[in-house]
Length: 277
Image 1: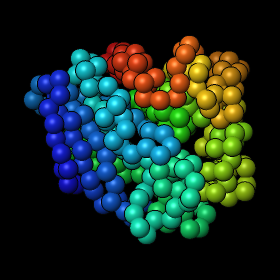
Image 2: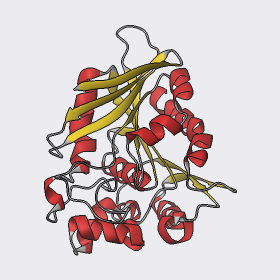
Image 3: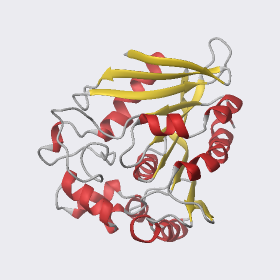
Image 4: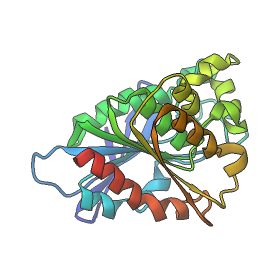
């Protein structure tokens, strides 16, 4: 692992690191904020998955999470959204290919060689973080935005034993039913829609996945709300399954980091309460 940069913030240290990933076959960059802590302490960790077109840098530079993480004693990890490089397949559109890995392990050529973001985020990167940073792997939470909200919900629902807290900003809750998801899941996983259900939060809940609670915030002025995000589908699925959904519709807010940064501390306090309790 190579350290790209370190900066002190709120008494802790913001790291940006790079390593050669066996999952993706490429170099991958990620950021880790470690709050101030006593020597030898093992800290709870929150994973943040970013959205379409983003890298680790978007939330690192604009997410405004460090003050809350310092106060709550939370490590905050932000991976990239896809493999990158000249030899990595790409697409001319913003919602597929590099920057749009959708947190799945692709099975369709030519993407199956590098686009293994599910394995990277759930297996390889957690092992690396545990080896190099003071994290308590028994206390983990996961959150994300848009495509990353989709990733956080699906990973959390499939690993309820690992994640004590799951939340999302403006997530794609039912990718099998919206254009972004249909394009990505079809392109990465092929035409068999039954295979898509393991990467669709609403379908996972319909098929029996259970957690005790989820937290979601959604801006009412989000231009993608009606066509791509559809939080009402998650609300209905959670109600039918008996999952406590804390759904906040935030009047006037859009899809941007102005929205995310406004409610980031609220989400981190929710995570902190569940991870430190």
